Length: 288
Image (cartoon, rainbow, N blue to C red):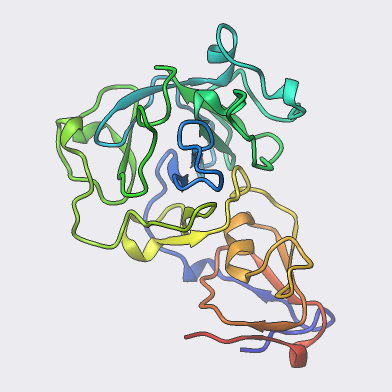
């Protein structure tokens, strides 16, 4: 498929291509379990996005990996007594003292030891992202941290039964007993990406099913980011693949694709404009 030149008509991705599933208040949108440095007690994260038009307060929400359940708290609630602030590490633009995810915004659940001497703080986190952690003070999912095959369940503040489930990843068993909510082993999720890669939800409002998750480059907090994203097959831009750029971009963004052949199946997202920088003759997408 050829891309149109910048001077010609832009390719606008219609909302009709998206799932018609109703919006939840927040969605588990990205999971980093296989960290690049192998530090599964400090460098993991779970991204939550709020695709709705109203702010959502996740105070008292609970995350469960089938082995351990943990209440979510603002990063500052932990760092006031134990850890270092992210601002002290040069991340002044992050929200550390709130559990409110604004409409169209994202939050990251970080390991409490993310700022420890062992943590590498490897991520470029989008400005304005709400930073959360787990109340227990141990790694997400308890020691030794998340496993690549751990399914996740996010509960609201009211309890940990099936009636309280807000979002899931990896099709966990549906049970009122949180300890039974492991992977149902009926499909290919949870994914098991290479080290340094994450599992990313394609349609934030879509179902927790195998077709709605992809192996992706980490993009913590960027799922609702609006701006310009550049893709180059030779590695000279922000992203190597169009798919990774789409997953990082929010509605209203433009993705600039440089010359090259991109061997990938592109799944489009609402409100994204895809533009060829160097012309249709030099930029192609080769699907499977």
